[in-house]
Image (tube, rainbow, N blue to C red):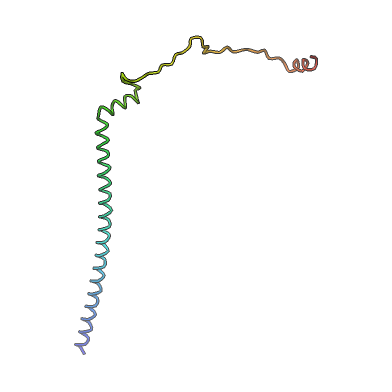
Length: 119
């Protein structure tokens, strides 16, 4: 009888050990799966960052070229080259820039009424 109890005890311990091992394997599998997904996401982000970095480096190289500096001087400072055509606006000297203001005398309302009915 003591042998039977001992066998049952050993069987219970083995079952618990197998179950806990299975649970640990499942947790490790889930952790590995999450790590793979995160690795894929981070590698995609790394590719995007490298692409953006290349674009920014290309823009920096263009920003230091003489063509870009000439373009900016044309846009910002209004500078041109010898081959540019410039249109100048001629201002007529006979244009009156300050129009005359006419001062009208205001009449009282009573006088306006009298004129209305008498004329």
